[in-house]
Image (cartoon, rainbow, N blue to C red):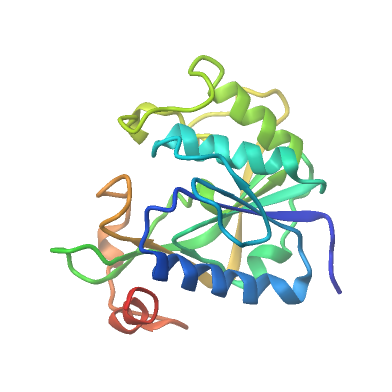
Length: 231
């Protein structure tokens, strides 16, 4: 049965190879279409994907990612929203989860990085912290959290913004600055995948070196999955 209390917010800077992003979008659409969830896309270039909001070429930065999340949440009409990034594969179960409250940031686990960069080994590796790109949260809570984190930096950041200089929306080391806001994690039976490609803002991402593998169920071999999405 469809649940119309959650909107999917897909966001992209349109820097990935168009064929790759198109395959990611197709997978996402095929996953959420049977659930009949509203879809809002927030992009730097116009795209035909759900309700599209094109913010223009504002540059690539962590700040702008947060703003795109916020822009999507402002346009949503549901109690909850969830994030969908342009280099992620999300299982169906991710879109079925709802936090216990509207003030809870819920992070999906497990999340695996697929390294597909030139000059690096093609492997999967676990990202223990999870990611803000794989979270389900109350709409108003996300809007308010972004506003608080970015209160002193204006609307959009420049392309020189380093992710390390930006505070996480969800800081796993301390409590939230918004009173009453909490964080939890939830486990989905099929892992989430985030591709690490040459086109991305950062060359590195935190991961567990001890978990490196070339086979990951149910996705199979890392080379086969790279070929399927990146050609």
